[in-house]
Length: 113
Length: 117
Image (tube, rainbow over all chains, first blue to last red; front, side):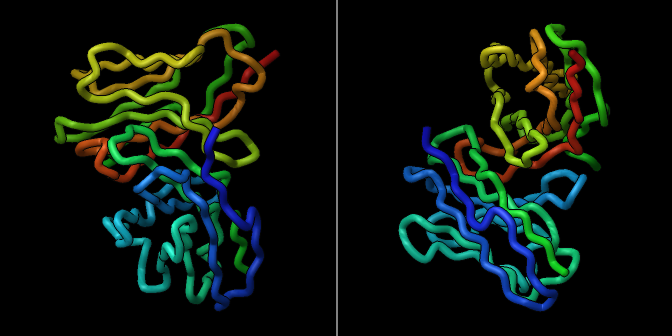
């Protein structure tokens, strides 16, 4: 069964460093998302991406965050200068055009120290 | 105001029994979708079941069924014949607008289900 894959599964970074989280969405999907989940809390929407541009973003997704689809398969989330409060599980997700379901990757756990 | 409310932070169920996890939602959009995801302790988000606002029948997927009561704005998940592997966090989520047009999911706070042997 096709799946969304994410790398790395876990990353520890120093405060102020840049981090790039990578995702390979399901191949025929056209909508891509990033969500985050701070430990013990609910899943929060960050950004959605369609047709090579951001279609919606939340207030969490400030200037420190950016997304990119550098080629036909990868979808990345960059955090320019990490803060302690960026420590969370980051989920990539995708859905197909005309589809009802959003499929999630296994998550990338980011720890900022 | 909360768009998705899960009022049960934790639930216990005996193995092989059925359990209902509650979810209420709030939207003025006539077109929306309701989802349930399972998050085991390993952290991944596993899609379980989907219900569209215009669907006439309640959704079912194996041991999972969604008790959709539109007038009450509730979308409870029913798990039949609970198994030990069902122990996990369960999230209810909603997608507003035309659900096949890429709208985001809004999640509830989750319910932690523990299945007792």
